[in-house]
Image (cartoon, rainbow, N blue to C red; front, side, top):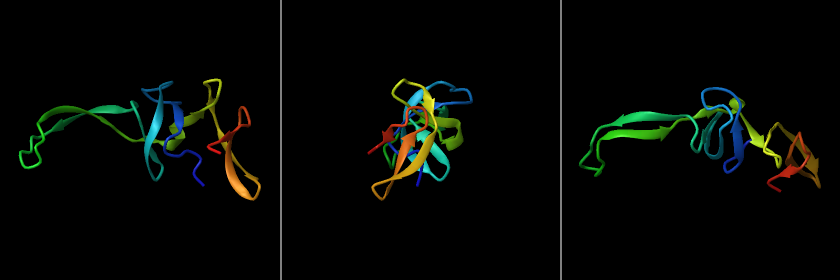
Length: 102
């Protein structure tokens, strides 16, 4: 069971975007794409066959899952635990104990 899923609200713990918040857009293995975090400039060639225009484009790059944490109700980063409730595994926040995504 993944501790961080698509659509979760996360905060960045380390790196150039430390303390930024965003929503997880995609997950690929141990990398996450977070909205507005780790944005890089990408130089794009024009492609008339696809109808794309050339230039410099901002692209959101992946960030490692260990560099982010879920945001609790108080707005602070929280680690995630897994426990069994009613025969199902559920995620809960270690700071407040509340169940996530129930």
